[in-house]
Image (cartoon, rainbow, N blue to C red; front, side, top):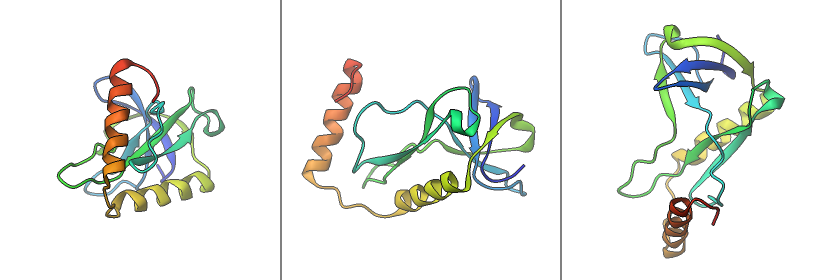
Length: 134
């Protein structure tokens, strides 16, 4: 098992994850592959696309939310054990791993939240509640 491999795991249902670290005493750091947001999230986070090019059965993204004062964003990062990994599904290219590294660094940086960013977040929430893109 190596960084960049994509595996099936069982959470509440069978899901794809990308291995972001190797297996050590604290487990394996992974990020869940999710459906694209379908709305413009620039300024709020970034998505790295993954899919057929990596041997996956569907197109998805790794979503990295930017931290916001008073809010701990859900970034779909978690730690699993070797026993949680069910079946290897594919592997990411070194270029894709580089994109993920950049996204992780961006997600760890402090961002200045302006009224425009807050308004954009509200617009996204409203669009998602109505079931369509903003």
